[in-house]
Image 1 (spheres, helix red, strand yellow):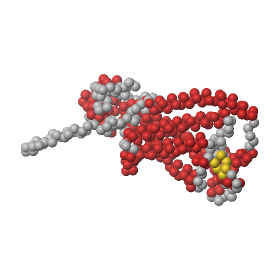
Image 2 (cartoon, rainbow, N blue to C red):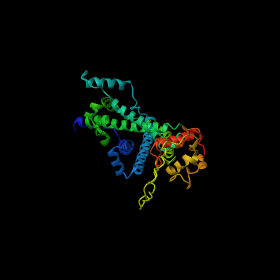
Image 3 (cartoon, helix red, strand yellow):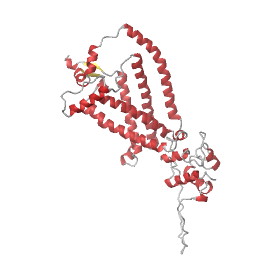
Image 4 (cartoon, rainbow, N blue to C red):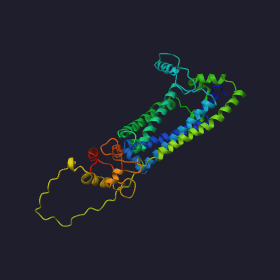
Length: 386
C-alpha cells in the first residue's frame, strides 16, 4: 500500500452516529423553525402547508428539539468518560496556540508567510465551530423553555422576557444556519471534502496536511501497559454510576421542559361560522341616518369587566376558556382566580400578569389586537374593576 494512502481512525462509530443525528435534528429544527419566524414569506406558507399546518410543524419542531437535547446529554456522558476514565487530554479546549494558529493561517492565506500552521487533533476552525454549537444550544434551550412555558416563566420573571426570548431564539437560529451554510460548508465540503465523519478515517496525506501534530503523537505513542488498564477499570466503576445519576437528572429536566405547559403548542380549530342573515325585502325609503358611534377605546369609568373586558374575553377567549373547566375567562370571579397554576390576572400589576405576557408574545389562538390588549392592560392597571 502506498504510504500516503495509509489510513488512521479519527472517529469511531459512536461519534459518526452522533453526527448523523446532529445533522437530522439541526436540519429539522431549521426547516420547521424559520418558516414560523418568517411566516409572511411565500415559501414559509408553502413549507407550513407541506407539514400539514402550524400545529403539525410545531410538533415536529419540538420533537427535533427533544432529540437535540437528548443528544447533548449523551455527548456530555461521552466527554466525561473520555476525560475521567480514559484520562484523555481535553483536545477541544481552546488555548493560546489556537490564537497563534489563526494569525498564521490568516498570514498564510494572504501570502505573508510560506508555511501554514501545524495543528493537532482539532484545528482552531473546528474548535470555533464546536463552541459556537455549544453556545447556540445553551441560548436555544433557555429561550425555547421560555417560549414553550410562558406562564411558568412569567411567574418568576417580568412579562417582557417572552418577546425578548422570541427575538433571541429566532435570530440565533438565523445565525446558526448562516454559519453552517457559509463557514462549515466551505471548510468541510468545498475547500477540502472531508469524509472522515462518514468513513471514520483520514489518509496519511490528509493527516499531514490538516493534523500533522496529531500524526506525530500517533506514531510515537506506545501501547498502554497493564497497570494503566487496571486503573482505567477502577475509574470506570466509579464513573458509570455517577454518569447514570447525572443522566437521569438531565432526562428528568427534559421531561419537565416538555410537559410543564401546553399553552405554546396547543391550537384550536377556527370557530364555527354562523350563516349571515340576508334581508329579502328592500328597506323602505326614506330611512333615518344612523346615529354616529365612536370607535375610540373605552376609558375612564366605563372600563370595567361588565362593560368592556368581560364581553371582550367572551368573544376572543370563550371558545377555549369557558365554564367547561380549566381557566375560565367568561366569569369575573373565575378570571381573577386563574387556573390550577395560579392567577393569570394580577390587579394593579400589568408586568406580573401572565395573561398579558402570553398575549404580548403573539401567536395565541385567541390573539387580542394591540388596541384590545391595551384595554386589558389599562383595566388591570386600574385594579381590574368589576
